[in-house]
Length: 354
View (cartoon, rainbow, N blue to C red):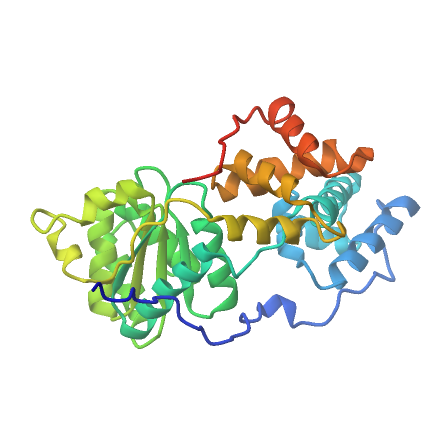
């Protein structure tokens, strides 16, 4: 008689994300005095921007970055002190605001935290944090592991989430850690990786920080060794997260990465796809105004996505909204299959993912 399977999904503690210091300062105020370069239309538009920012969803620095405006320039514009015509910068901010609002109201699929990928990922993150060890979370491309890490970082303090660049070397990894720890100004101009390493360890030692390295298979060998050493010396948790290719780097019990393998204390089975229940929860969250989505339409969406959360969230659902529902079409199997064929060119995988 076989033993029952182990349930690795844990109930995580509730924790509000830390406040950004810029979010707790007083609200922005429309200027009383304006530079002569501001027209009446400019003043009205600045007031619109300030009202949008004061709604509390986004902060000034985020809007500046998203609009590709220097933060100092943007600050002068909002204070009515920019000495030249501000129309170009105001228009850039208004365009970004409009795009952001449209994305939020019509295209963003709400995150569903009951999906299996997020629950399994959180079990790895949380266990690694508690035991200050290394963990591995492997999930096939398109299943939502990156989004899982981003959501966990937003919900739990002392979480560093690094989206590893292709062929990321140790210098780039250390610089990214310094930036996320707000220490880059201390090490500006230094090319000494050992000095950077020591400063990072000093900042992390004695904390309950967990570092999530997303797409860790892209790390260069030396960068992977630095991640291991940071964990050893700072006594924190590190998660190597990625696609199945990551197995080939850390699974062997011999060779260069044996020191990493011996430190991995939690390593659940790889996830190959989202399941049917996950897909249905995402679909229902994406179409809250649909009274009831019939089974045939759900079947069709499952067949099209083939177990890929990315296909479902980034391709199929937005296309159904834009080319179907917004044009008065009914959400049924015929619409889903037509969208799959004509809008996103997806082959139908009968029965969904296996």
